[in-house]
Length: 171
Image (cartoon, rainbow, N blue to C red; front, side, top):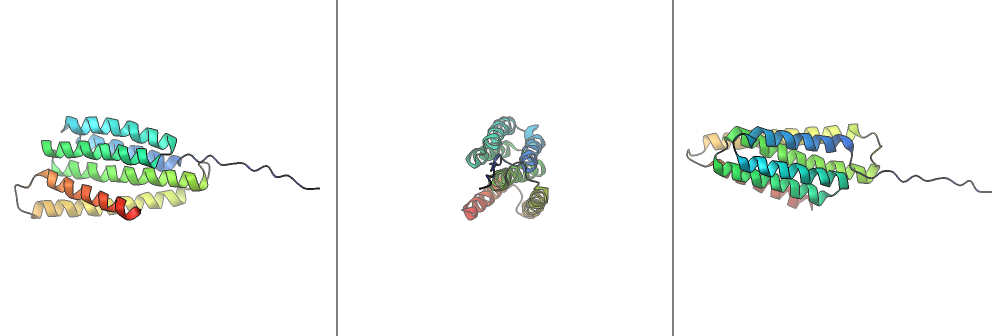
């Protein structure tokens, strides 16, 4: 006589904690620069919708595209003259949203949505915040110490290049 075991397939949707942190980070990123530029506001609203759908469906591609749309809006805002500090805060928050979104999807795929994963999620997000702060402060120091008259878009382009490098290294 064999004992049949009912296997339950876990819910592989993205983790709620880091998925929520991704949306919060993107909201903060949009809010910190949206008052200065309609490009930031439009790109941010579109990005929130795309990232939200990406997190709902578990699509890394949608999260990446959504954060890319937000960065494109920020680039437009930088050209319009968004001040450096809000711009750096927005770019850093957008990169955090991208990273947290991807981490939420990975946790969901590997462990399932119901697993208790806060001990894995929070240190990851904390480390990303720390790296983002160091990069933002370093970028601001370079901006202030560099030759005057450089556009804010140069700082954004540098951070966008860092994001592309991070994406390339992840492959």
